[in-house]
Length: 388
Image: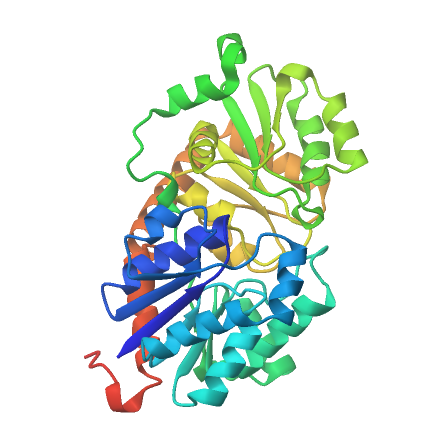
């Protein structure tokens, strides 16, 4: 049995997710990884059995790739050259529909699997092509992997996908950012807070990752305004690429200068590691969404989280076992949660202990890959593994 894992993205959490899963799948099955030669973690990927394809780096390159499909056919040819029985898309790419269509036309016996990270597309990302891409892959794949069980009913109602074609695998922990790095949390905080560390800053609230409308930064800023009053030891960190709205920029300017730290650009893996380690609580105040890779980073570092009650986020934090849950878009609810976790050190310890136990036992990539391998194997009756 052979597996072709196809990840054609270049950077970000999807890259780390795909790499982490591919690393562990290699322990269970003969695998080739077909990746973009522009992948920012190419050196790590090349430790696996890899085939690199030039993809594109901008919108012009994308449209040219659709007109002249030579690059897309290199991916398809690599799958057939490997004689893959199984094809896995750990994250969708703009080329995914064309690759899937060719596989089904030229080798119908090959079974195709796709992880659907966002069954409901985010605000600001709902363009016609992405709708087509997701709808096509959902309907034409042999089976799907979801990160939250709450979307199973929706997939059945909208696309007729039955339970036997769905595997729910919670997002694995992003230990990639911390493996092999040796630094103390206190040191991380000093590096991050610089001179303010000398002023008694002890409690850091962090908003990390791409700044997008659906992520609710404005809600967090308004909640932090209420929370920080009278507290000289708190700090808000906002770090990630994306354009701040006028309201968000205004709210940041209204906060005391020594209470907020903004790093508005793409973050390196090492920077992400330091930021997570320096934080006392990580907040994902989404106003809509599915789940969060930032929460998986927090879990990997043993950090408590506060999330909103939208999409699969409550499920991701064990419905309160691994983090606090607030009402999406509710400033008071979030401000109150910040106060709870700030005041109650025993609550923080309980959440941290629960996270560490859960992450080690359930969210390891080895455990996730084993479940995925067994699920995939069940779709090839003649080569079914013995799971007894």
